[in-house]
Image (cartoon, rainbow over all chains, first blue to last red; front, side):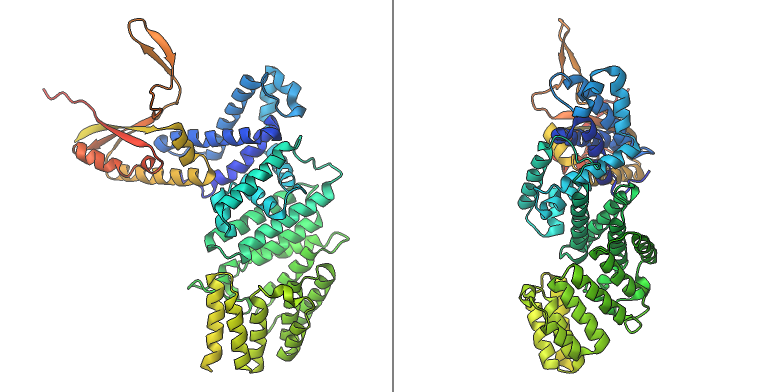
Length: 415
Length: 118
């Protein structure tokens, strides 16, 4: 029997969710201890006897037994989940209650409630994201620090502060709560940030790919439940699938960054493209067009074009116009200018780049000068292009970016 | 060939440290599988053995007093054992060096099985 790649990570989030249902969210630390103990016990047996046929079921059985032991031992000394206080008192009802907490549908719902609880408005967005990665995705502080290029100590602090807020709440977020709509937005936003960190982030490729997959998995969980499977969720899932389709080609064989226009389109993940397009179509059911819808639509135009030349730049410019009315950020304006440059030629693109109203907010963003450089190069002014690429390389955020921009710079010298 | 027992010892804290997070659990399990597979492939694995609970009782002396575990002051509890075959104790020790428990802060006690050559 082989060990599946992310067994412990997956099961960690599921088991903590089930145990929290019994123990109550104020006993989150206890739930985590039980999971930790279940891992140790499982490993000790598996190490000598080999991996069982159903390792996930095995871990769950260990956690379930341990939960029963703890409730029996501590029920007078400790308060568990308030909605279960009577149920846990009697042996007659205790066992079925614990069984029910570990049922597949309950675990799914509890994971959703946990996700919503992690996106508590009292927590900053980066803390919400770290908490989701830790509790639901089983990432350790070290792994999160790697993914976010942040110090481990800072992440640990973020997580422990977040858990304090969680443990301080009476119960996990209830999806029937009046606060549902704004909280769902926060959850989607956290997943979006998580995905972007994986997609654009500067850390090592393997970690980032996993972060992207986790973001897609969490969106999948939301899509399994009728309350959270709203058009906005589908649009976000579509957007992530379509972007994830080109992850395999974002870095070339030598580990160099490869921009969309230069990628080998035959290596894009056809399954993800198909999934993304289907989700995008389903996402059109609602009355509201969100930024996720428009971004997904832009990604869809790119992935369905066979080449850069065949790309419908007119449609893309139109979509960016639309996006500017929903989320007018300088990065959106920058991408719109680049699309206009593709549609109407480099002169016009440069004009639009210069016209970005709050371009000072892009001064740490290497792809602003890089876009200027690219259009100058296409216009034939290699000297100007070269100095823009040099400026861009000077503010590159990681080795892959720096390498790419320096290569571009050198290309302008050799001609 | 002679037989040896590997006794795996580990303190509670090291045990949780080395296996208690998803990341560590995954790594630890993979290393153990690789190590056991290697022992088996080279024909040294006689009996994979059994894991032992970290609790139990000790019955002691003529009074037959019964006390609860843990069993030693050192808290370095035996978590399991494996029976291996090796040329001599040197080879048994050499083979045990690959045991992942060492990286996690535990130890392997290598004990020859007593033989009666009559």
